[in-house]
Structures are given as structure tokens and as C-alpha cells.
Length: 119
Image (cartoon, rainbow, N blue to C red; front, side, top):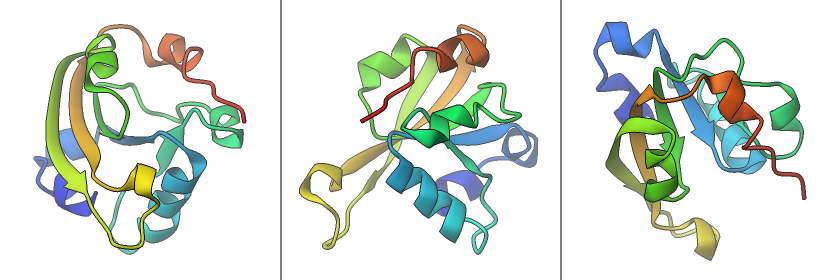
């Protein structure tokens, strides 16, 4: 995440948010992200959904995982920029794509209503 975020120009960094598919990923970003100067994560999973999209507009988002075609329904520009691999990752979270998404089609507050996932 830090490599992707810090490659952005300063004007994009100031607008960028990180969206995680689940609270574990979001929690890792929030915990370790302080060390790497990352923005707080948002997620539609469990209680993270209750905290909303924070101050993010969705203008530029780093999205962890999910389906590229689904992201293209929300953003005009979707680019796979990284793949997360780790020997200790859960099998379903290994080889996890990371997308840089720009130019949200709908207001993020509208999209937020569709990302709620409680398990």
C-alpha cells in the first residue's frame, strides 16, 4: 500500500483514500499505516461500514481486492497497480490485486449504501 500511495503526486495524495474489502485489511492499514504515513482505511465490512466514507470523496482511491469489473461500474478509471503476496496470508487473500481507481461516477455517499457487508 505504501508503495502505491507514495508514488502518487502530492495533489492526488491529499485526496486519496484506501478502501479495503474487509475489516482485517482495513485494520491492518489503520494500524501499520501510521508508520508508513498512509491515510485511514474505509471498508463496508461490519463496523467499518458504520464509520462511513470519512472525509473521502472517492475522487481517487486505492482499492484492495475485489473484482475489477465491479470497480469499473463505480470509477471511470481502474488500473491494477500491485498484487499482494505473502507466505502467511490466508489462501483467499494471497495474490490479492490492488487497484488505483480515479474519477468516481456516483457520489461516494451513494456508493457507500451499496458496500455494506455484515457477517
